[in-house]
Image 1 (cartoon, rainbow, N blue to C red):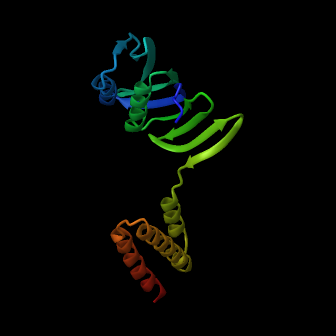
Image 2 (spheres, rainbow, N blue to C red; image 1 turned 30 degrees about the horizontal axis):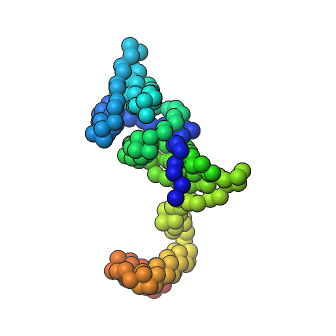
Length: 196
C-alpha cells in the first residue's frame, strides 16, 4: 500500500462549546502531541499543534457566550497527527473536505457531522467514486410516511425482500440471522394487518 505524503484539510469547520474546546486540546495532549493554547484580547483562542517541527495554528473564534468556531485550511505531514485530527473531526462532528495525498493519487473525503459522506479517488486527472453514504432506511421511512395504505403494503413487501436478501447473505457468510429474523417477523405481522 502506498505511503501517505500528507493530509490536507481543504476545508475544516468545527463548532465547539468551551468544554468541548478543552476536550479537543486534551485529545492531542493525551496522545502526546505538543500543543499550545493562545488566548487573544478579542476572545479568540488559537490552538497550536506541532507537526514535524512546524506550527499548525487552529484559530477558534468566539461566537455567542459559550461557542467557538474554527474554519480553515491545513496541511498535516505527520501521519499520527493526521489520524488524531481525523478522530477529533469525528468526535466533535466536524465538517470538511480532506485530501489524503499519496505519491501517485489523492483520496478525497467529504465529512458532514463527523461522518464520511463520500470518498473519491483522483488519479491522472480522473475521479472515481469509492464510497457514498446513502440513508436508505431514512429514505424508506420518509416514503412510508408519505404514502397511503397500498403504498405502505408495497413498501413493506420491498423491505421484507431486502431483509430476505440480507438474511441469505448472512447465512452464506456464516453470520447470525437473529436480528434479521426478528425484523422479518415484525414486518410480516404488519403486512398481514394491512392486507386484512
